[in-house]
Image 1 (cartoon, rainbow, N blue to C red):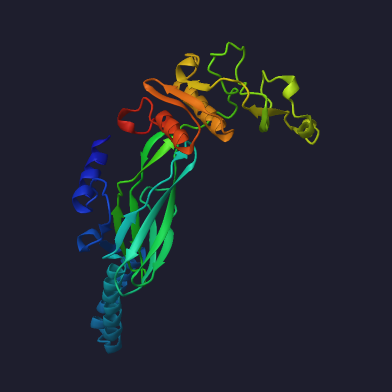
Image 2 (spheres, rainbow, N blue to C red; image 1 turned 90 degrees about the vertical axis):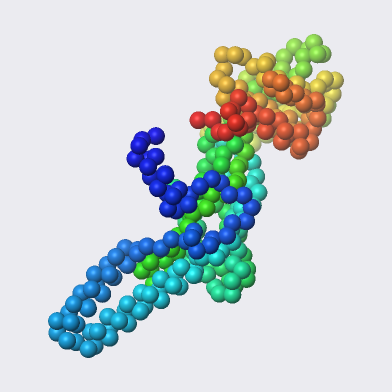
Length: 332
C-alpha cells in the first residue's frame, strides 16, 4: 500500500467516518450525511456572483431580485437535499452462499420512519464499476433492494462498502453517506466442468470408479471417458446431431452397489492443483446430492459420515470453501 493510499484512508476514516463493519440496524444521523456542490452547483456559484456584481455596477433592482431569489432557491435545495437522505435507518439481510464465478446477492433494507417522502436516492457500491439503483421511499415505510457483486474466489467474502447519495431536488448539491454492513457471503469452490465419475469407497473390491449401482435409473449425463458402452443412452443419442457438435449421453444409476460413496480429498492425485482438487470434490458433492445418494466426506481433519440431505451438502461445501484459508477469508 502506497503512502498516498494510506493517507487517503486515514482521511476518510477521520472525516467521512468510514470505520469498521457495523452490525444490526444503522441510523444515518446528521454527522454521517455530507453535502458538497455538484458540477452544476459549482457552475451556479459564479453565475450568482456575476449577477450580483452586474446588479451593483448598473444598479439593477430586478437583477438584485433575481440574484436573491436564486440564492434562496439554493438554500432551500441544500435543506431539502440533506433532509432527503438524513435520518434513514439501514439494515442488511442474510446472504445465500454462491459458487465462485457467480454473482453474490446482498439484500439491503432502507427504512424511512419519517413522515415525508424520500425521492431519487441512489444506492450502490462505493467502488467504481458498479451501477447504482434509484430508490423512492414513501413515508413510514421501507424499500428492499439487492446489490450484486462478483464472487471471484472461494472463501468468506465481505460485502463492499455501500454508498447512498442524492442530488434531489435541483441537482445543485450532492448529499451522500457510506455504510459498511457486517455481512459476509460464503463462496463455494467453482465446480469442475467435466469432473470424473463419482468414486466408491473401495471396500467392496470392485474395480473401477464411478459405479453407484445398476438397479435404479437416475437420469442421463454427458458421456465421459471410461463409461461403459452398455450404459449409453441410445434413445437420447438418436435425437442428438453429433455432426453439429452434440455429445454422447450416458445413463446414470443409483442403488444396488452394496457400498457407500466416499469422497476423500486425500485420494486425489497430488499432482493436481489444490483449487482443482477442491473443484473436483465440489462437483462430486453436487452430483451425489442430485442423484440422492448417501456419501461420506473426508477433507483433512473434517470427516462426515455417509448421509444425503441439504444440511449434509451445505456442511461439505462449507468445508471445501474454507479449506486452508487464513481466518476464513477468500483466496486470491
